[in-house]
Image 1 (tube, rainbow, N blue to C red):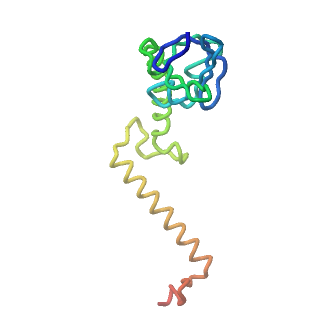
Image 2 (image 1 turned 90 degrees about the horizontal axis):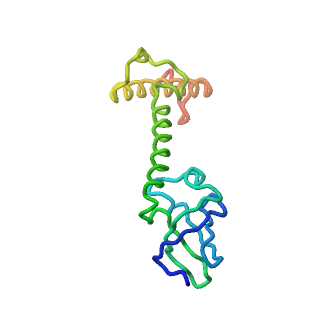
Image 3 (image 1 turned 60 degrees about the horizontal axis):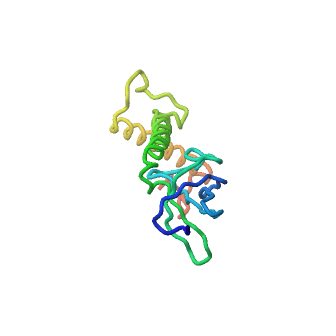
Length: 161
């Protein structure tokens, strides 16, 4: 029985790469599931969803003139639970990463004046960012002026007009 586009077949994952997974199919054929066809969510590491030797159901998307077979995991209704579970795990990782990223001033290694069990509001974060930005610009201007001896690049003395 020859494989046809749109068919759902069972196969075994034989290899994982950065860009997808190779799956052995009936009749000793091999197809590839591109990383974009693994899940409905962003897939950074295909190893989070599949492992070598795993049996999977795949949908045949395309068979080109050279015999290359394109497959999809996410388009198979039976895989919905597996794809969703893996997506949930991936989303949980993303939420933890986002919470870590949004912690006040962690990226600057400074202690916030609001750090006493107080969540920063957007306005407080913007105010704090603006203040820090202004401080950095002032420091940069001072360093530039001292480097050039108080003279501007256009000529003339900044100190004396």
